[in-house]
Length: 472
Image (cartoon, rainbow, N blue to C red; front, side, top):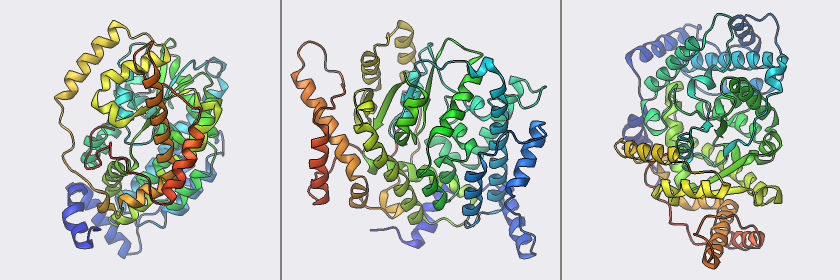
């Protein structure tokens, strides 16, 4: 049974809405000014650009490629009932993104940076809430690996000559602390920090072609627009960012992740030809159950008009589209034998075991340093408390049957690769059972299971608990 409107407003939203006194006062003043015809406004592209140029100390815009996506964002967000804080944050978010974009564009004039190679990176390409954050953390225990840290992603380049790395770090720390203050539940579900490995989304966002933007702010038309765009411009900017940061640590291998990489496999391979790619999988019911909760905890900051069912529908469309696109890419011979598949239910049941299997698969040395760091990390992690709330699909107006239907092709693909691995492991007698990529015959199995799904006969994958949150 779907959650009633009265229950939505009282019993559910109260768990997510966090309005400190100062924020409430800003919104109250905003409402008063609105009644007087003086409501805060979303800035124009021109004003945002001028603000960014002023902060960068530049006199002209290095590139105008960002304008199309930014225009779509502005048009769509104006249809959303942002509160006063939401308008302030949207304008600031766009200006900060432009500052990063403009300063990164300046790096193209430095051949020391542009000629730097990004060798053999590790790409975590699974969707959101599929174990990617845990895997990201574990891979960064290896001294030979590095990821963008939170402060580096927010301020990858000095945009003022006198701006030291220490000042950039402090600016980023303030920004992250402010977000945690406004959305404390989000901080528990998906912790961020200046010294923690950060997703690539912050860098992708500077081109205004990132689904992160449509998660933070309700922009359904923009969300659909992004799904039709090539990833190449985002990844070119991302590579330039890594090249810039790599000057300080040239000998380490990059580890990168984004929950929206499933639809980017072709462009990822074009940009990083020798990348080792890990694709994490989870029953979409658990994925959506968890991610809708995370999205809500962010959106409650910027709007007072929260419709849980509308949010659920938007997130269903986002991830169903992204993972449906990924199936065609995963079936392509270019990727079929070069991607390591890791399943959420298996991974979270024994992270250490499956990390070792991943190392074996790619031929990486599992050094004593990695083993010791892993043991210490798992012992420390076991003592941490997790978010206690337990969201449900019906809270967001979704049913298990509806989600299974939307992800039918993806579910069939995942079932096929698990069956192929089971057959391969059963026939293996010369080495331990290790998750291996077996592409032969997957196409036929996928087609057969898709037919079963269309007829409503496919058995529900019950391996994944969808009742609560574990780790991202």
